[in-house]
Image (cartoon, rainbow, N blue to C red; front, side):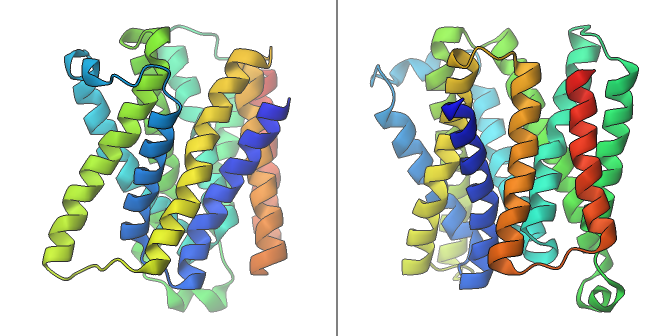
Length: 288
């Protein structure tokens, strides 16, 4: 149970940390690249076998590189969602990506997809929309396209989870899980670093003390959110169908608590309804 609690805390800190980038004036992209450097270092330190040259010969290397680029893109989208809509909305959009692995499993692996799971999936989609809504007086501050951010975060997070799920079932042996996770973080670092170097040369970005501290502070919960998730899957005794909904519900609720307490975010009745639907949606997928 302690692994589940720590995973929830790390996931919530991850979203809150992205919101703090905007509050503290941290440049998002350099800090996110440093975040993946921190994740890569943590991943290497926790590897039992430090000889990682075997990665070059794995079947899944090209997929890891693709996922690394996707991770960077989705991280930026989640950051922008937290900036424009609040940490609670970003958390709901990201964590409700859970519906995609469920649909993916039903179609590809023929796992049962009950009526309750269908209703839960629909409730999740409605929840993202309701949680993204802000009062009318705030609308003039945003361009219309910004309202796509929570949807992209929702779809992108679900896509990442589904692709990782597919890779682990079809290409990655159980003994390779740790090195696969390391490879994902390293690939994200590699893709992000290339883009960042180009931007630094063009003087479109800069790296200062805030970005370094922010990136390290974000990278630690980012890495350990995955570390404790894997530990919970291996040691908690709970099935994944119980574990994932519990972690997602806990993350959404804890992030909302942080947002109300620290950021003084205003939640309208529709936002509260969206949060309620998020809990109901995940709950239905759990019991279904």
